[in-house]
Amino acid sequence: MSLIKDIYSRPFYEKFAGTAAAVIPAFDKKLFIRRIFTTGFKDMEWKERMQHTTGVLHTFLPEDFGKAAKLITQLIGRLRKDDTGEDSLAYIFFADYIAAYGLEHYDHAVKAIETVTQFVSCEFAVRPFILKYGERMIGQMTAWSLHPHHKVRRLASEGSRPRLPWAMALPALKKDPSPLFPLLENLKNDPSEWVRRSVANSLNDIAKDHPDVVISIAAQWSGISRETDAIIKHGCRTLLKQGHADVLRHFRLASDHISLSGFDIITPKVKVGGHLEFSFAVSNRNKTAHTIRLEYGIHYKTAKGMSARKVFKISEKLYAPGAEVTVLRKQSFRPITTRRFYPGQHRLSIILNGAEKAWKNFELKPA
Image 1 (spheres, helix red, strand yellow):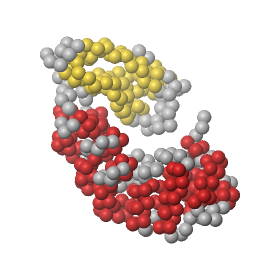
Image 2 (cartoon, helix red, strand yellow):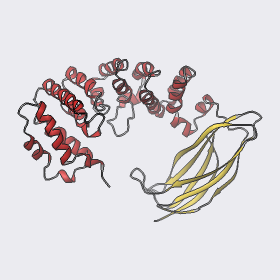
Image 3 (cartoon, helix red, strand yellow):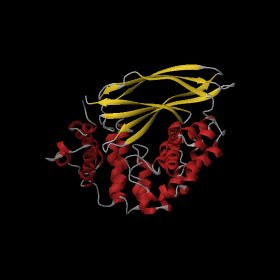
Image 4 (cartoon, rainbow, N blue to C red):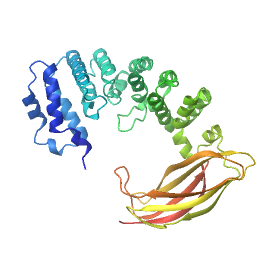
């Protein structure tokens, strides 16, 4: 099985060196390859290899950042001409170069970010600039939210997310997200679904610290268009999973007269690597059609013996008066990189319109 770090292979570097030699005067391809493949390269993980590539490339570019940025733009132009690298994770070192060497050169760096992000995303690279330049950089990103290119518009929302996963934290925007509201407002009707989903992701980030703010935005944007309603729904996903009362009211997800029956854990003992199987029936006892959001929660045992719930959505749809549906579900306990399983007693709960209606215990056993 190939690993993500293996995108940085000898064939990749040899091909890139050929492109660089066609753009950068006196570029020494053999020296570049030699500097890339140091004795420790094999043991580097993906991020280390990416940053190592940034550092090696720096030794072949001018010390003057403005001149180096122009050469990077020319490199991208050549890669596009050769139909190579567009949106490729391998070329993220171009964005990393700006963050590593352009932070003290605001004007040149901003221009480079605007260009490079149209080739490979600068959503991580822009964050040190937000930290250093604050309102000035947010002002630039608000201007980018009106840019003709959808990738630059997406950078405006994605790069400024208060809680962008795997990215540098932005404590000021976690505390006060209001500087982001103008750019999100500009993008709420964006023609690109990719951009609109980024707006939703930003709202979801904000909701984790300021739920009332996002509920207020949801009320303001509701009914503008089908696309904006979709942004609101996706942006409120964490609040929905938490069963936040105001969000449930906003989406008219009352749990009155919805009944649960026949809840059964088919596999009360599950081995790590296996599946938990369970079933239940849900009925709409209202005299009118009613939207029912079906979810279940796994209360995982943690390393310290505590319990941490993760909610999984099954469906959300309109049920006719008196309608009853039986649900059969499987939940995998196959080991994954983002979650470690600890044998012992776990709990499964069934959630109807944000309300936990029933729960049962099951035992997770070693593989």
